[in-house]
Length: 252
Ligand code: PGA
Image (cartoon, rainbow, N blue to C red; front, side, top):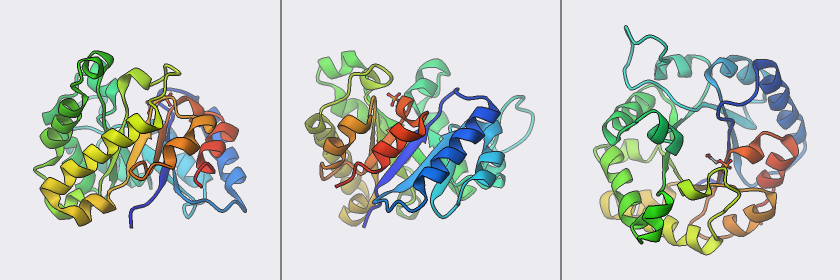
């Protein structure tokens, strides 16, 4: 059976000291709490080592927010998947809409990143999602379907089965405007169907598909109650231990 996952995406927030303090606070808050999901925190690269050291690995998986599309070499300023894995991190967010929009990450680049992440034993949390104009033009199924096919459908079934998918409508990210639970369910079911057509029902049924975009304690329960919504990728609300915990404990 697929796992429920709540993953925090810290983006470019918190100094090293603030980040370690936040990780410790979340780690403490989880003590003695029974959760119905795996918990992940994805941090800036330089936070990875001390955050891995600060948390109980049995309760919290640590992840990076990106990795390079090259294995190693003369790529000044880049951080490879092997480097991420060497910190003890287990996850990497790839294809976030902010990376696609501001850093021009294409389907081809993301394809390379996914291959390198998997080759280094990392679990990619692969993000897809449409912008507002695409939703208004009723093109969201085409856009999301293409994002999945173009970057992921050259993977073997064995490799595809290691991925986590995050559906994040760009119009909902950081805007306070959440997709309704029905909107999320509709497109999550479409994503699962798209996966089933390529890799079969068993792999599709076992793939965790997270919702992201202004998810908070007050709406997480309704979203997570939908059959194809297996948790969330959380930005703003992951930067405070109490709101992040409110989402982690939102599963019925
Ligand atoms: P948000 O961000 O929760 O702040 O909308 C989600 C994300 O971008 O992963």
